[in-house]
Amino acid sequence: MDEVKVGALLVMANSNLKGIISERDYTRKVILNNRSSSTTRVSEIMTGNVKTVSPDNTADECLRIMSEHHIRHLPVVDANGVTGILSIMDVVKTILKEKEFIIEQLNHYITDTV
Image 1 (cartoon, helix red, strand yellow):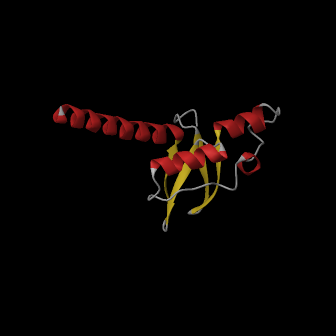
Image 2 (tube, rainbow, N blue to C red):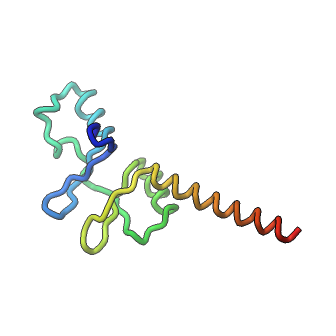
Image 3 (tube, rainbow, N blue to C red):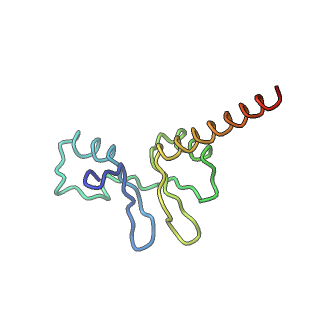
C-alpha cells in the first residue's frame, strides 16, 4: 500500500470481492497486537463484510454510507463485478465541487437579476 500510495486494497478471489484491507486494519490488527507481517495472512485482518455501492449511487449517498459505517473506502460494483473503489477524499472533493458550482450559479443569478 505504501509503495503505490493507497490506503486500502480489495481482496479478490478470481473476480469475486472477498474483503478489503486498509492501513487501519494493518495498524490495529498487526502492529498494535505485536503480530508479524510476514506470518499474518490477509484473511486474518481484512474486513470481510464489505459495504459496496453501484455506479449509480450519488456522492451524497456514498458519504452517508461511509459516515454510518465509519469507513473510508467503498468498492464500486456493477453486474459484471468490481469496477473501482472510492475513497472518502474522492467523495468529499466531488461534493465540494458540486457545492461550489451551485454557489457560482446562484451568484450569477443574483448578479444578472440586480
